[in-house]
Image (cartoon, rainbow, N blue to C red; front, side, top):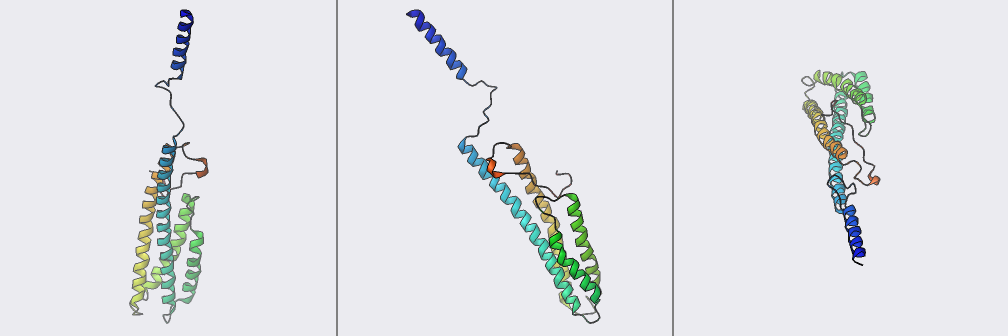
Length: 196
């Protein structure tokens, strides 16, 4: 009987040892509380990315609007170059549809849009500069200033968007496989060529 007890004790000890996790074993499963924390972090980062994208595109939309207003004001001036105003109006109306998309933008699409913007803005500035003094319309200078301010804002907001997008992408990489599959989370492109 003593032998039987000894064998049972040894078997119990071996079973307990086999069930004890070793230092080099890692648990891949995420606890429910951790999953909720990760989901909260993910949502906060994604919301920041989207909010900064919206702010940047809103500034760009405002710039396009003020370019349209400036063209309207120039068209009221006697002797204005109507053909150039008409051509620039048509090009300006197409800008929003030509703009890069957040999920799919690449360097070429950004460059193409920036070139299309410049092809409106440069001749528009030249056209307005001919009439700022002679037409005695202060609104021309005000609209030129508004366009420049929004142009500067677009550049600045691209930078703040990149900061948020970079943080989001790094977080996704660090937590790969820990998010619920339903999120379908993907990294987002940056304006920066280096991604740094």
